[in-house]
Length: 244
Image (cartoon, rainbow, N blue to C red):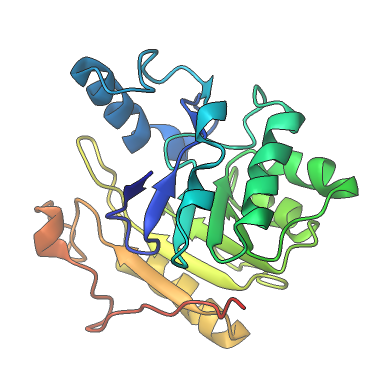
């Protein structure tokens, strides 16, 4: 486990590493680049690079930390990848339940698996369950699958935002995160696209979090990420849902 530079979490926990691409949002996957870098460095757990790998030895890690912490689960993978057995997902969720002092954020692009898996299983109250939404074709349909799961807190990670999403049904959604793309080959995000999501979240009473502009600024000029910052319309948007 490690402290995270991701603005909306505190630590990462990766009982699974590695993944495969399923949609345009995966094109410039930061986790793939990072995994190959760690493999080259000889880091433990990345001997196979970005090949999907289960790490049962990591399942108990959150139980060793008593101070309440927010964990992003599988920042380097997708827990609901088709090659991850149901039994392993159950083990991850069992840890989440046992480590009740913590909050666990689970994000997936394999949204169609969610209602199937949770049909006869319980989603722990301290699990914040979310789907990635990058565009209309692949991203928006994931929201309907997420809505079918009886989870206490559901969220959308709209990053990288690749186009104007138009109307979004936010019924049953408790948190919305928006961000642009970073790194080599990053695709620009129009301010109007982010504003559209923010305005709909405000109208629906859903907390809105603006993560970053990414490699491109709101003026359409490519710059350093740190220069672009996190301001949208002159202010920070750091709203988060209340999790009890």
